[in-house]
Image 1 (tube, helix red, strand yellow):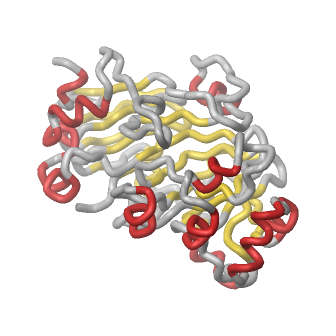
Image 2: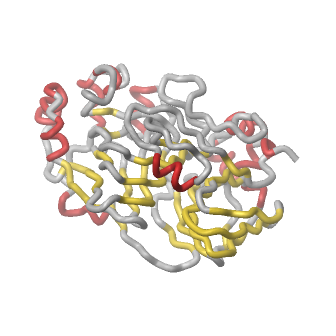
Image 3: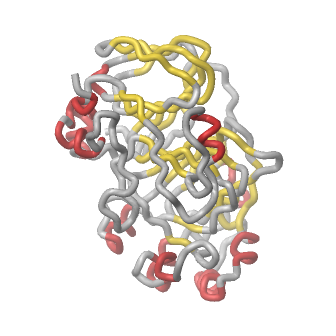
Length: 335
């Protein structure tokens, strides 16, 4: 049986293309078998998505040498299930990353589906969410403008590259492991240094980087070639200070299965502990702690250990989780 057929869970090696910002030590520490990288802050897990404008960078290669993207295209029903294929075709509709912010990320946002179709020729925009895995003392994320901003003010900040004004206009939120943060398309944000996350997102690499200086090579990288006059139309300029509870969730439930995001039109995520029973689905499994066994209906038992990541095919059937283990299962949108 080939891993490419989508009949059994496949354990994945690290997939850390070089990025423009520092990080990677927390990924190496979690995995335990990956050397730290100075500029490897993102591990693209079970990725069928490439860097914006590139042909292959970012794609996951299965242990047998096949690209996961090609394997899914060849066996879509096995990997994704008939209902998903009917809704989305041979498209996983999901990108998962481990992201270790070795420095503060720039202030940026992502386009909606409609904006991405109109201006970037993309089926998907980039709504995303973060599950906090590790956080240094007082580490924070910055999300959404605290007060509503007018378009001219935001355009002026970007034109002058006033990083202090842009960051200062956002809501700082101190985070701790276990927190979950939902980031709708358009909402400006920046992840602070010392924050380590499992990130779910729609499967694109589309970012409008308002704070591009000292991060990207040039201004064009900030707007991805469409000009800031157009790109800034995707920015959510409303104030979020009084309703951050819509974006930030703190839940320390010891339940076997805890739903982390109620956003089935974009993606789903579950925190799993021993005794979890899982319906058949394509998914990405990240083992955060401990060791255990995933017992699948049609593909036998799969040993789990801290730091391991898996692509889970629909064809493996229902499964149960046993052992002293904590994991996150990331799922595509509901068909």
